[in-house]
Image 1: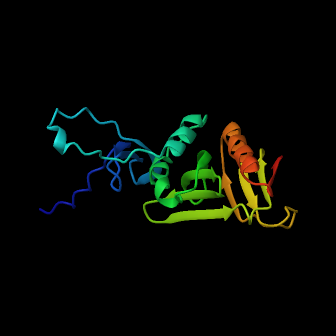
Image 2 (image 1 turned 180 degrees about the horizontal axis):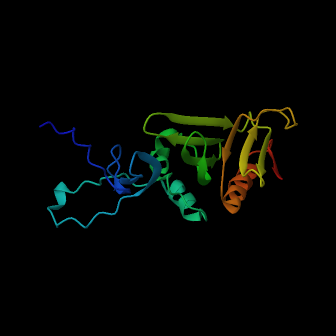
Image 3 (image 1 turned 120 degrees about the vertical axis):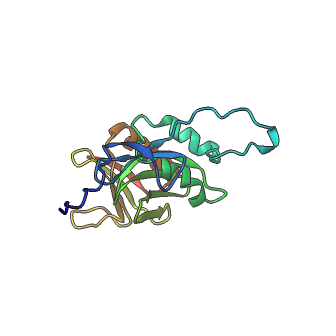
Length: 192
């Protein structure tokens, strides 16, 4: 007597260690990995000799840590990008504000003293968009669509933004937009 092949084991939906970053947990929806991540909580390790202690994750730059502390919305799904942000910033560049945003995936929208940028690092693809202050002509946040738009031309009905990301939290979008307005003389802020 032959039996049908056994079905593969089903893993229930749960927060599991991220296969790409040991410092994070990623949500498994029962069928596939999602873009939602969070910082992994680990138990305190047993005391070891002081010479062998090495930090698992480098500390955030002070300007990045301060911007993270000012975020009113949630950065769920964006902490991996926040942790990687230091590698995308110049030595003289200072982060003024940031918030979670959605482009091709859930990432982080950042305003620095030199530019606006969006960073998303996914399992399969990556998205990095940047606009320097000498290129930006306008920054617009549309309350209806919750889209944060950056233009390199005068914003008109036909103008196409240089980049557009969705920011769900209005107050965080306004903080980033106000930081952008303060950082650059050229862009003006429109909230519609």
